[in-house]
Amino acid sequence: MISTRITRLQWVRFAFGLIPAALIAALLAKFFALTFWQGLGLLLGFQLASAVWDMVWSSMWFRVIGRRTLVAEFLDALCARHYPKPAHHNLRSPYDYFCDVRDGSQYPIELRTEAASVATVIFTIHETTIQRGMQLDMAWTDALARYEREFFLDSVK
Image 1 (cartoon, one colour):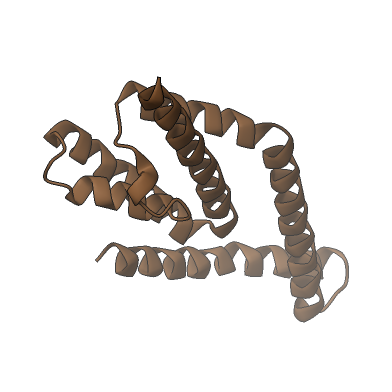
Image 2 (image 1 turned 180 degrees about the vertical axis):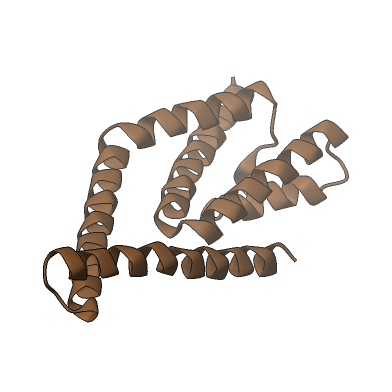
C-alpha cells in the first residue's frame, strides 16, 4: 500500500516538474533565440549538472561528517531505549532488524511501536531518495554493529 502511494507521488511530482521545465525552456528559447528543443536541452543539462553536484556534495559531506554524527545519534537512541541485542538479526539490513523487533511479541509494546516507526522511516527514505536511503542504511548498520559489540561487552563484565 505504501509503495503504491509513493510510486504515484513520484509520477505526479515528475509530471508537475515538466510544467516549469517547459515554461523555462520556452523563455530561454524566446530570450536567447533558441528553438524550444534547444532551450529544453540547455535546461536539462543544467538540471543534470545540478543533480550531479548535489550527489557529489552529499556523498562528500556524509563521508566526512554525516556518518559519524548519524552513527552516534542512532547508537544513543538504541542504548536509551534498550533495544534487544542484534546478534540474531541480520545487521546488513537495519529495516529487517526493526521489523523483527516490531514483530517480536516478547518486547514491550512501546518498543515495538517505536521500532515500527523507525522501520517505516527507513523504508520511506530508501524508496524516495536512493542516495539518502543508502546513507541511512550504512549509518544504521554501523550503529547496530557498535551496539552489538557494546552490548556484548557489557554482558560479559
